[in-house]
Amino acid sequence: MAQTQLKNKTHTEVEDGSSLKGTLASVFFVGIFIVLTWVGVYFLYLDRF
Amino acid sequence: MHMHKFEKVWLIFGVAALLVFLTVLGVSAFYLGNQPPSCLATIDPEKVDTTAPFNEPGLKKVEGKDWDYELVFVAQAFAYTPGEVEVPLGAKVKVIATTKDVIHGFEVAGTNINMMVEPGYISEHVTVFDKPGEYLILCNEYCGTGHHMMTSKIKVVE
Image 1 (cartoon, each protein chain N blue to C red):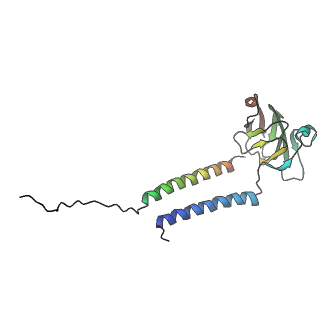
Image 2: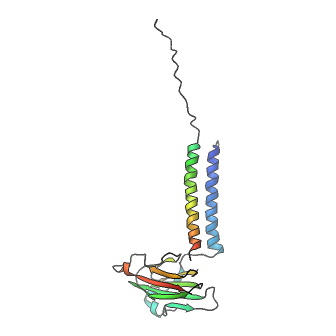
Image 3: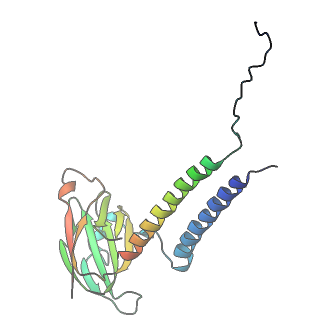
């Protein structure tokens, strides 16, 4: 028998759009890189005459 | 205003890093007295040869100053005077340089001594030569056809 009901539920997983985990990781990746290069150059400066 | 917790975290990190960098810069400039190599000292570029201390280039011992020696260099296309100089190990030296013609560079390779010498201005850098060896002085401002030949040498000896 033909089924006319609209029963086939489509279940869409909605990701939480407000998650900033990836952004946080990216920001600190760049931030730590800047700090490390700065510290590296600073100690090179202190080491040389 | 709603602000995400992570946003606060990286804003605080960024502002703190900025404050640290600016504090280091401020201490260096206003407490340690570091200044740009060319800092308000001027000279008539046409009278370099007759103006002290450039009338006697080379290493000179001085008394009653914060440094023990003055190392005077005159740059001109395409050489430095003196062409080679010996500095005793551990000496606190004020390097003083100027140019008679165009802008030259004064880079002692592998050290912090790296300054522009500009006509009309005197460039200075105080340092302690605490590592023995031969140090190449290079012109790193393009000054003409002989630019790549323009070198001198500092020997730090015991």
